Length: 380
Image 1 (cartoon, rainbow, N blue to C red):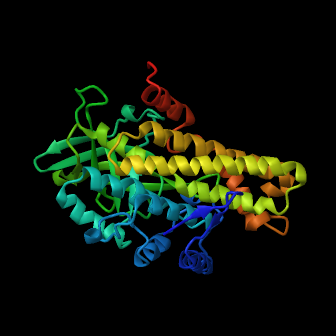
Image 2: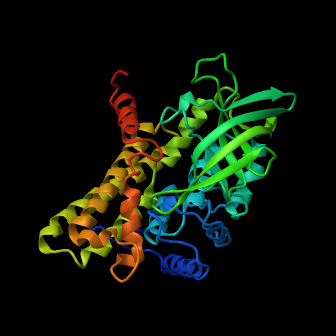
Image 3: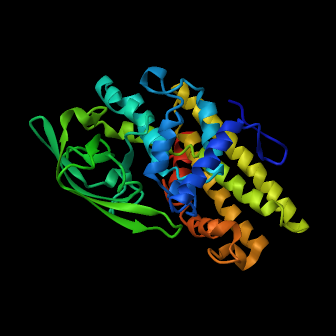
């Protein structure tokens, strides 16, 4: 699969069948009445779309063929994700289940966990959500309080998670818990896979400003099999940091931002042309950063500084795209329904969602801290 951009930064030479498939799925989702006008694909979700992706063989393209993947080059996978973002498909469940959690299971999981979860995820039969954030922890992941106590061959989990995308439709949670209260906070953490249908799991769903949802998950004496721990017990910090490296390569957001610019390109006045071209240049830089991070991950290199640069750069670029849409369209960029709405209200949803883009998935300050300490070697 090849994917190139011309001088203006548009995506070209995308296999016709990918575009045709994405457009057909978009139409099918609209006919089902599913809302596609969320602030970005990462904000929207659809179990139906996820299952369709699995049936089409689009999930886990870079995974081994014997596990349901296609052994595709990792760079081609992120190029495909960029194009799926351009078509504004609901990708939250895919991004969590495949890019972040599926890849983490392949890297840190036992053969048993890999064989149990990866083929079903590739087929679109298993979807994950991610249980990291907590009400009292903020951006400080090591401050989490959800705890797991060991009883014979199982763990019993109690706590609360928030900002949990896909929680209401996921089968399993990729859960960060504290398994030893006596150890320093970075050393007493573990990662485990929790069945979202188990007794004691309760999910409250909240709407977001951009039109999507997130889950508030209450865990009360939820039992988790001891074999469902990913990596070493109390060694979860290494697993968590590896997972975040996968998560922060957000190539699909490059596609979203390019779609926004394409909507603006035909209506912008001459004095806005330079801003549009400059932002396309930034997006090309974001794309190349994503490719570099993906290459380093595939080679087993440490990638936190590069993946944090990816996350920081695309978050800022998307906010610039939102601001530019208002500069060009004025109040019409904020109208989400009726004849004055642009792109069926999608631009308005994008603008509402843009406020959180430098917060969700790790704030910009966190990304700058990682870049400074791990990339530049600066002191804490």
